[in-house]
Length: 112
Length: 114
Image (cartoon, rainbow over all chains, first blue to last red; front, side):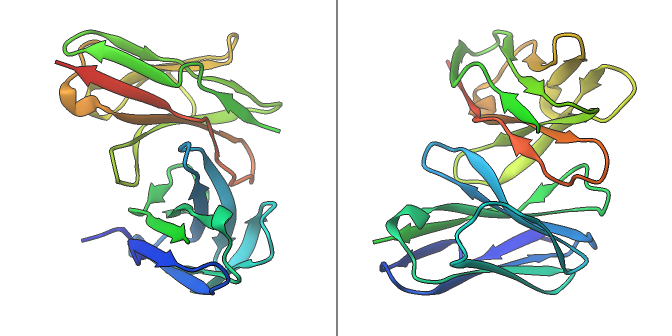
Protein backbone atom coordinates (compact mmCIF):
# COMPACT_ATOMS: atom_id res chain seq x y z
CA UNK A 1 0.00 0.00 0.00
CA UNK A 2 1.68 3.18 -1.18
CA UNK A 3 1.12 6.02 1.30
CA UNK A 4 2.05 8.95 -0.97
CA UNK A 5 2.12 8.30 -4.69
CA UNK A 6 3.08 10.52 -7.59
CA UNK A 7 2.57 10.20 -11.34
CA UNK A 8 4.42 10.19 -13.55
CA UNK A 9 7.77 9.06 -12.13
CA UNK A 10 9.63 10.51 -15.11
CA UNK A 11 8.57 13.36 -17.37
CA UNK A 12 10.60 14.53 -20.37
CA UNK A 13 9.23 17.44 -22.36
CA UNK A 14 10.16 20.36 -24.57
CA UNK A 15 10.52 23.96 -23.49
CA UNK A 16 7.29 25.89 -23.70
CA UNK A 17 5.02 22.92 -23.06
CA UNK A 18 2.48 22.66 -20.24
CA UNK A 19 2.56 19.62 -17.97
CA UNK A 20 0.97 18.32 -14.78
CA UNK A 21 2.19 16.10 -11.96
CA UNK A 22 -0.33 14.31 -9.78
CA UNK A 23 -0.06 13.38 -6.11
CA UNK A 24 -2.32 11.24 -3.97
CA UNK A 25 -2.06 10.23 -0.31
CA UNK A 26 -4.06 7.51 1.44
CA UNK A 27 -2.96 8.42 4.98
CA UNK A 28 -5.96 10.58 5.80
CA UNK A 29 -3.71 13.62 6.30
CA UNK A 30 -5.05 17.16 6.09
CA UNK A 31 -1.90 18.86 4.81
CA UNK A 32 -0.04 18.30 1.55
CA UNK A 33 3.10 19.88 0.10
CA UNK A 34 5.11 20.28 -3.06
CA UNK A 35 8.90 20.49 -2.91
CA UNK A 36 11.49 21.05 -5.62
CA UNK A 37 14.88 19.33 -5.39
CA UNK A 38 17.49 20.80 -7.70
CA UNK A 39 20.52 19.13 -9.24
CA UNK A 40 22.56 19.85 -6.10
CA UNK A 41 19.97 17.99 -4.00
CA UNK A 42 18.75 21.20 -2.34
CA UNK A 43 15.14 20.73 -1.25
CA UNK A 44 12.83 23.73 -1.12
CA UNK A 45 9.16 24.06 -0.25
CA UNK A 46 6.98 25.42 -3.02
CA UNK A 47 3.38 25.11 -1.82
CA UNK A 48 1.32 23.66 0.97
CA UNK A 49 -2.41 23.03 1.26
CA UNK A 50 -4.36 22.34 4.43
CA UNK A 51 -7.86 20.99 3.93
CA UNK A 52 -7.77 22.23 0.33
CA UNK A 53 -6.74 25.73 1.43
CA UNK A 54 -3.41 27.20 0.30
CA UNK A 55 -1.32 27.98 3.39
CA UNK A 56 2.23 28.20 2.07
CA UNK A 57 3.09 29.85 -1.22
CA UNK A 58 6.79 30.46 -1.54
CA UNK A 59 8.39 32.67 -4.14
CA UNK A 60 7.54 30.51 -7.11
CA UNK A 61 6.88 31.74 -10.67
CA UNK A 62 3.17 31.99 -11.37
CA UNK A 63 3.68 29.47 -14.17
CA UNK A 64 3.37 26.94 -11.33
CA UNK A 65 -0.17 26.41 -10.11
CA UNK A 66 -1.15 23.86 -7.48
CA UNK A 67 -4.65 22.45 -7.38
CA UNK A 68 -6.23 20.44 -4.59
CA UNK A 69 -9.52 18.86 -5.69
CA UNK A 70 -9.86 17.14 -2.31
CA UNK A 71 -7.83 16.45 0.83
CA UNK A 72 -6.20 13.35 -0.64
CA UNK A 73 -4.94 14.97 -3.85
CA UNK A 74 -2.60 17.81 -4.68
CA UNK A 75 -1.64 18.31 -8.30
CA UNK A 76 0.98 20.62 -9.74
CA UNK A 77 0.47 22.22 -13.13
CA UNK A 78 3.35 23.97 -14.85
CA UNK A 79 2.83 26.29 -17.84
CA UNK A 80 5.42 27.32 -20.41
CA UNK A 81 8.13 25.02 -19.12
CA UNK A 82 11.68 26.38 -18.98
CA UNK A 83 15.07 24.65 -18.82
CA UNK A 84 15.46 25.75 -15.19
CA UNK A 85 12.34 23.83 -14.21
CA UNK A 86 14.28 20.58 -14.63
CA UNK A 87 14.39 19.02 -11.18
CA UNK A 88 12.87 16.32 -9.02
CA UNK A 89 9.51 17.33 -7.59
CA UNK A 90 8.38 15.71 -4.36
CA UNK A 91 4.92 15.61 -2.91
CA UNK A 92 4.48 15.11 0.83
CA UNK A 93 1.69 14.97 3.37
CA UNK A 94 1.36 15.34 7.14
CA UNK A 95 -1.25 15.46 9.88
CA UNK A 96 -2.75 18.89 10.33
CA UNK A 97 -0.46 19.86 13.16
CA UNK A 98 2.41 18.92 10.88
CA UNK A 99 5.26 17.22 12.55
CA UNK A 100 6.27 14.30 10.39
CA UNK A 101 5.97 14.73 6.66
CA UNK A 102 5.66 11.64 4.49
CA UNK A 103 7.22 11.95 1.06
CA UNK A 104 6.30 10.47 -2.27
CA UNK A 105 8.89 8.84 -4.53
CA UNK A 106 9.40 11.97 -6.62
CA UNK A 107 8.87 12.97 -10.25
CA UNK A 108 11.97 13.67 -12.29
CA UNK A 109 11.15 16.44 -14.76
CA UNK A 110 13.54 17.04 -17.62
CA UNK A 111 12.94 20.02 -19.89
CA UNK A 112 14.79 19.89 -23.21
CA UNK B 1 13.15 33.19 10.02
CA UNK B 2 14.54 29.69 10.41
CA UNK B 3 17.55 28.13 8.73
CA UNK B 4 19.62 24.96 8.81
CA UNK B 5 23.33 24.48 8.18
CA UNK B 6 24.78 21.07 7.48
CA UNK B 7 28.49 21.59 7.87
CA UNK B 8 29.68 18.69 5.73
CA UNK B 9 28.50 18.13 2.19
CA UNK B 10 30.20 14.73 2.01
CA UNK B 11 31.31 12.26 4.68
CA UNK B 12 33.18 9.13 3.59
CA UNK B 13 33.67 6.41 6.20
CA UNK B 14 34.61 2.76 6.33
CA UNK B 15 32.13 0.06 7.19
CA UNK B 16 31.66 -0.53 10.94
CA UNK B 17 33.20 2.86 11.81
CA UNK B 18 31.23 5.41 13.85
CA UNK B 19 29.85 8.47 12.12
CA UNK B 20 28.54 11.90 13.08
CA UNK B 21 26.70 14.16 10.65
CA UNK B 22 26.55 17.73 11.87
CA UNK B 23 23.55 20.04 11.81
CA UNK B 24 23.14 23.55 13.23
CA UNK B 25 19.94 25.55 13.12
CA UNK B 26 18.76 29.06 13.76
CA UNK B 27 15.30 30.14 14.81
CA UNK B 28 13.87 32.91 16.93
CA UNK B 29 11.29 30.64 18.53
CA UNK B 30 11.05 27.07 19.76
CA UNK B 31 11.85 24.46 17.17
CA UNK B 32 11.07 20.98 16.05
CA UNK B 33 14.01 19.16 14.45
CA UNK B 34 14.15 16.28 12.01
CA UNK B 35 16.58 14.06 10.17
CA UNK B 36 15.49 12.53 6.88
CA UNK B 37 17.37 10.01 4.71
CA UNK B 38 17.18 9.78 0.93
CA UNK B 39 18.45 6.61 -0.69
CA UNK B 40 19.45 6.85 -4.37
CA UNK B 41 16.49 7.59 -6.66
CA UNK B 42 13.99 7.46 -3.81
CA UNK B 43 11.92 9.87 -1.75
CA UNK B 44 12.77 11.06 1.74
CA UNK B 45 12.18 8.86 4.76
CA UNK B 46 12.08 10.09 8.36
CA UNK B 47 14.97 8.83 10.51
CA UNK B 48 14.10 10.59 13.76
CA UNK B 49 12.63 13.77 15.19
CA UNK B 50 12.86 15.99 18.24
CA UNK B 51 9.65 17.66 19.36
CA UNK B 52 10.14 18.01 23.12
CA UNK B 53 11.30 16.06 26.16
CA UNK B 54 14.51 14.03 26.23
CA UNK B 55 17.24 15.66 24.21
CA UNK B 56 18.60 12.29 23.06
CA UNK B 57 16.41 10.93 20.32
CA UNK B 58 16.64 7.44 18.90
CA UNK B 59 15.52 6.65 15.39
CA UNK B 60 15.39 3.85 12.90
CA UNK B 61 18.35 1.83 11.64
CA UNK B 62 20.41 2.46 14.80
CA UNK B 63 20.68 6.24 14.36
CA UNK B 64 20.37 8.73 17.19
CA UNK B 65 20.63 12.49 17.54
CA UNK B 66 21.08 14.91 20.40
CA UNK B 67 19.34 18.26 20.65
CA UNK B 68 21.63 20.88 22.15
CA UNK B 69 19.79 24.15 22.65
CA UNK B 70 22.81 26.15 23.84
CA UNK B 71 24.80 25.18 20.76
CA UNK B 72 21.74 25.17 18.48
CA UNK B 73 22.79 21.80 17.16
CA UNK B 74 21.12 18.51 16.31
CA UNK B 75 23.93 16.18 15.24
CA UNK B 76 23.17 12.70 13.94
CA UNK B 77 25.25 9.73 15.07
CA UNK B 78 25.59 6.02 14.48
CA UNK B 79 28.15 3.89 16.35
CA UNK B 80 28.76 1.43 13.50
CA UNK B 81 27.71 2.03 9.90
CA UNK B 82 26.89 -0.45 7.16
CA UNK B 83 27.28 -0.24 3.40
CA UNK B 84 23.49 0.08 3.20
CA UNK B 85 23.65 3.39 5.12
CA UNK B 86 25.11 5.06 2.04
CA UNK B 87 22.62 7.83 1.27
CA UNK B 88 21.95 11.56 1.43
CA UNK B 89 20.96 12.80 4.89
CA UNK B 90 18.93 15.95 5.42
CA UNK B 91 18.46 17.90 8.62
CA UNK B 92 15.29 20.00 8.81
CA UNK B 93 13.74 22.51 11.20
CA UNK B 94 10.20 23.68 11.78
CA UNK B 95 9.41 26.53 14.12
CA UNK B 96 6.75 26.17 16.77
CA UNK B 97 3.24 27.49 16.39
CA UNK B 98 1.12 27.19 13.30
CA UNK B 99 4.00 27.49 10.84
CA UNK B 100 3.88 24.33 8.77
CA UNK B 101 6.99 25.23 6.83
CA UNK B 102 9.85 22.73 7.02
CA UNK B 103 13.24 24.17 6.12
CA UNK B 104 15.87 21.70 4.96
CA UNK B 105 19.64 21.84 5.07
CA UNK B 106 21.59 21.20 1.89
CA UNK B 107 22.21 17.58 2.75
CA UNK B 108 25.21 15.43 3.63
CA UNK B 109 26.18 12.54 1.40
CA UNK B 110 27.31 9.65 3.59
CA UNK B 111 29.37 7.12 1.67
CA UNK B 112 30.23 3.90 3.47
CA UNK B 113 33.15 2.05 1.95
CA UNK B 114 34.05 -1.62 2.49
